[in-house]
Length: 110
Length: 168
Image 1 (cartoon, chains in turn red, brown):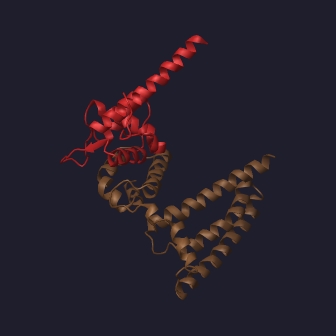
Image 2 (tube, helix red, strand yellow):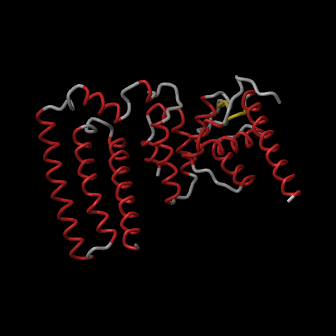
Image 3 (cartoon, each protein chain N blue to C red):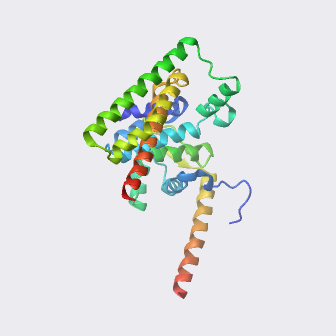
């Protein structure tokens, strides 16, 4: 996938870049609210995000248009992945898989 | 634990407060959770993401900016009454830390934790001055995060230095 200037980056999220990536992965399945994301992320990555970290990352993702809050009558707003968020996630995963492939190839040669 | 949401900026609370407290209520209280929420509150104040929050780069939100503006204007804009209160706070906090240091030295002698208190007293007294001179009109939560956070960090830093020095 070719990178353009308008493409969103998770790099400027600082310490929130990894939690943000995990949130995007979690929302790629279906819209979820905060607590469901925490549970899902714990099951897929083995890390439990605290509410401070979770909402620090959610606020960044929402302000950049990568996720969107859905209206709910419940106190817990669900969030969904936007088109921009999906693109950011695909690009990040692609970059990561390139790194993984390179690492595995070099390990095989060692 | 729900009170901790008050540490976040008002605009942030308006946007995420309700769902944040719901998620917080579903967590088991632990030192790690408290640190996570405190870290999130500091981040929300330093890097506002919600519209309506003031951006630091725009001007006078940070204590440093405020201090610089006041220094450039020839010092803090304090009334005589404010100056009197700040001076009294410095005198009494100096006395308090001196007596506390002497009492702890008498009981525990020159242990690193006591020595660290002695070294951290000076910046702590400075923080008391900051608190009374610059932060008085701020919200209690802001005062608590800035003052206790810096004092705690100073003490831990000094404690680390004293522990290392004791092992040399």
